Length: 159
Ligand code: HEM
Picture 1 (tube, rainbow, N blue to C red):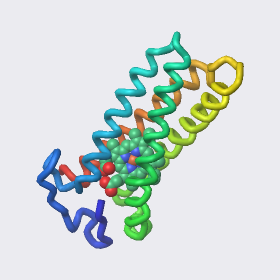
Picture 2: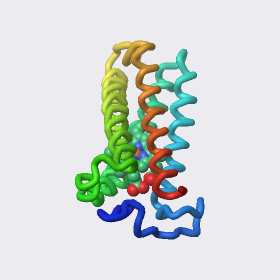
Picture 3: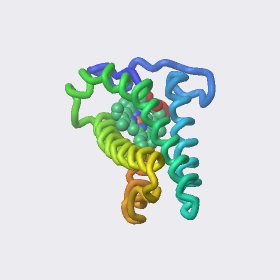
Picture 4: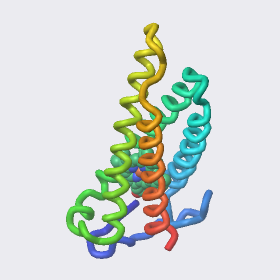
């Protein structure tokens, strides 16, 4: 995303690859990664009887998310911070900030479960890192982060 202070949607960088929207290639790749991750997590949700398999899938998903935040999303956020502060109530910035807050929550809870899983894997403790309700809440938060990420993409690069 490249935000300018006067006109949040300018300048547009036209990319003719992958989706052919105004998004830079790296953001198309990020979108694809995030969709693959939610599919992976959905598969993980149904591996309830095999906790090792379930935990491994969830850990891979969370650590991949961590990488995409550090390498792609956080740098974009920092690069556009000035425009975000100057136009905090514009629709695009509200979508961005909502996405970031929910995304940080999803990442934080995911890292908490992942750390517990990795720690329990090295001990003889049972590999159950949270309750069913906690897991459902986590999946819902992650899904909401994705929805706002998609909203961001559509707002800035499609419409
Ligand atoms: C479960 C967690 C998350 C999911 C599923 C998710 C998903 C997405 C998706 C699908 C996009 C649109 C593709 C793109 O434009 O790159 C996006 C963009 C973005 N995300 Fe996230 N995200 C998550 C966490 C975070 C976190 C923790 C941050 C905080 C740094 C963040 C900041 C951003 C920013 C700034 C963009 C815009 C990138 C651009 O300039 O195009 N996201 N995210």
